[in-house]
Image 1 (cartoon, one colour):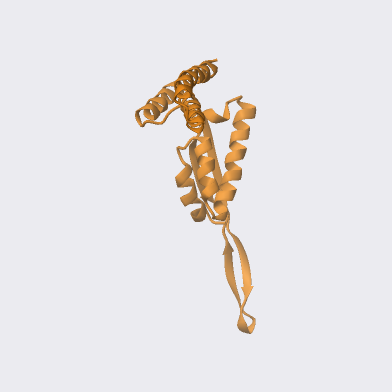
Image 2: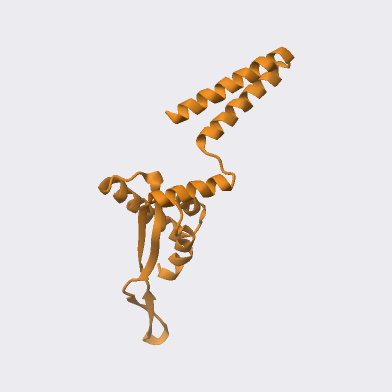
Length: 164
């Protein structure tokens, strides 16, 4: 497969963190995305095994596809002639690296500014939502006030579990 078929796929994953890059690649239907996924998985496995880095802390630092040597094949044509067919190949390279402390803090600040919440906030909201749903199913006003205090306690428990 030629390098020109890999480049649009590689352009979409460059600079993304590894889970996001995998998600983007899983949505592509082209064959190049499957090969890039294999190369990305190999790079992540090397980083986690050789450098003892966490997979969630990695991002795609660089990725590129270079042309490999072209293989010449011949296609038979009429009257004993032959046309040359070029089988192009590519060398795909994916470089992963861990975020530095400054980059990680900047990412967290951007996430906080954009309104994305962390796991503790999500757990707290889910616990409160489940408590409200349970209160609505009973339909009892007295139960609702007790459930509100229970949802606050559940949210605190979820928050405490996250900080541990």
